[in-house]
Image (cartoon, rainbow, N blue to C red):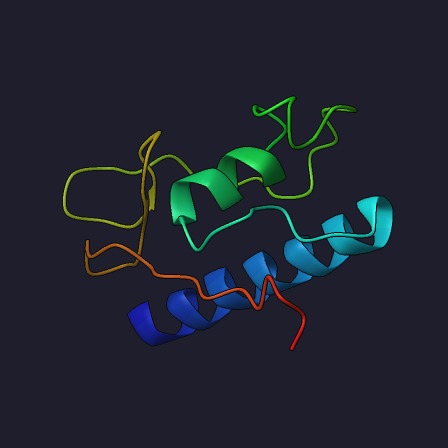
Length: 90
């Protein structure tokens, strides 16, 4: 069950990044900070996402479970997800 949830989380995140890129013509972060990426995708960073479009709606983290805790996006085992964006488009 946790593997399926992790796969679903990653697929939703990838789809949200692609949708953001289609909308704005750039990636949602200038670095590989998961917090910065998620804040842009949920519309809470109006510098990066000035239209405040919600591309991603992560569930709220619960103790020992996955989700968004306001600064980190956690997998179903409670560890932080990592993201690597090719910000140089190479």
